[in-house]
Length: 160
Image 1 (tube, rainbow, N blue to C red):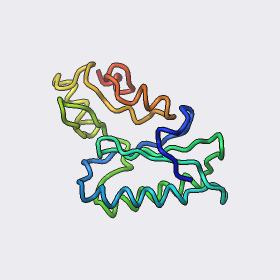
Image 2: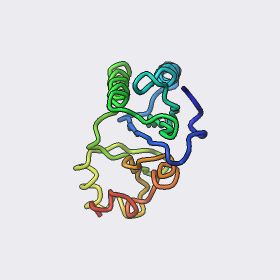
Image 3: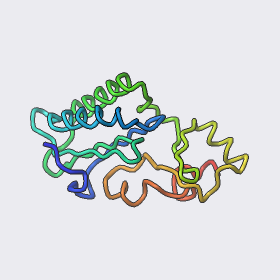
């Protein structure tokens, strides 16, 4: 059951998939209906999930489920991963590689491997104040308050 992302309670579980590049306007016109269709039919043990998505910066796909109405099952998580894999193929993007970091460089978003990010820290091209995207947040409340944070306030701080 598709709802607006803003309607999800703060404790709703989320999954964040970062793209290695922004989606173009043309791609967004195809991506949004695909996500709408998936979310509308997403279920756990045949029971529809109260789910939503958002596409921040045309660079991230964030799926959310209100688990107060129906718990997510292993099979429903598997369904979402298969769907994301299909999107990777259709749009020729990387969405499932968790060994990359996205961060702000001025007005732009940079996408680097962890080793490149560490080198940038060493070279002082990235600092404790650099805004990073903490894709390890677990629920909508954390997403809204701890997703876009300074590197010093994230797991990225281990590289500083």
